[in-house]
Amino acid sequence: MHERLVTHYLYNYYLVYGKIDEAYLESQNFSIIKDKAKILQIEHYFKDKGKYKKYAVDHYKLQRIVLINNDRFKLVLSNKNRARFPIKRIIVFILVFILVIMLYFWVIKSLKPLSELKVKIQRFSKGDLNIECKSDKKDEIAEVANEFDHAVKMIRELIQSRQLFLRAIMHELKTPIGKGRLVSEMLQDEKSKARLHNIFERLNLLIDEFAKIEQITSRHYELHKKPYKMSDIVEASIDMLLIDNPTRYICLDIKEDFILEVDFELFALALKNLIDNAIKYSSDKKVHICINKSHITISNNGEALQGDIEEYFKPFHRSKGGLGLGIYIVKHILDMHEMKLVYIHKEGVNSFTIL
Image (cartoon, rainbow, N blue to C red; front, top):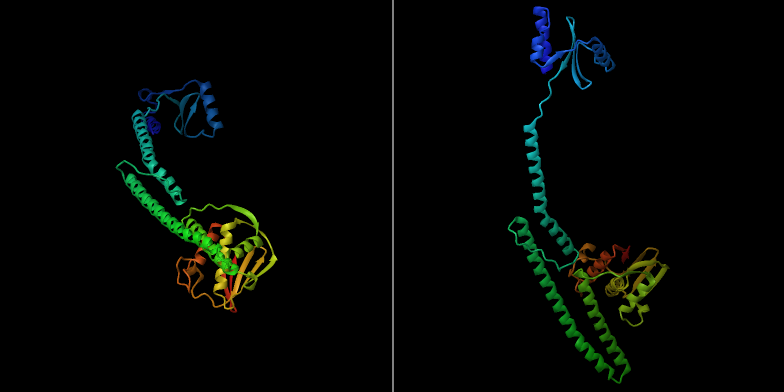
């Protein structure tokens, strides 16, 4: 802008007085280049860059050159002025930059407890109750951490009391079962002895199942997956039913056996519950089990489920002559194995398929 103002002044002065005001140029720290050889070099330089016009500005050999080539005169000027270094702006920028950096680290430091709390919440969601996130600070994050720590303690105490209660009940039940088995061994009648022995064995197995179900539903059970043949798992689940002559009730159809990577005891328990329900609610007390490629289907003759299958996935749903836990346990075990249970009722036949 300064160079343009100087150029306009020179042009207007020339129109009035017919000469260049060299004193003005000197006062503005401009000098006229009069060396013809240097002028030729500068003009050649401007022509090469495509800037040889009526007015052009460029740097040539560390000099700022102003070329004026109008209809009145031609001048090649050297501008000796230098741009002032914006010290005040630089100082303000540095101060603001330092302030922003300090603010950044302050925010990071303030949010660090929130990040630690997030990690502990993730551990808690995975079943780790041995966490402590109490804080002695006075900010909002500390208040949230303290409330969460209080909730964790309450939940931990509740789970521990429930486990203690269940273990006490199971211990008290096992004592009379053990005594009953000893008494049954003293009977002379072998048939009665075998019958009582099966009853006590069934009760003992049920208590073990309840303990495992408690672990599953409280998410404290760790899966031990290994590859097993589906037919072997089905046979184990049938054995868990403890029924005499199971072929009277169960028809096993193995079309194409396959290997499945599961927790054997847990998956057998799921199948056992499905088979037990199929026998219990069948109109003819018979169940058909079909193993085919990548799925197993358990079906029986009987009435369709009164409600949607999703209702039976909930614990203690309304059920005829049962606690309403069978399908709930099955669903829980299948979810742990990332499998799906599909129910279909067609032409008087209920079919449960595990995919």
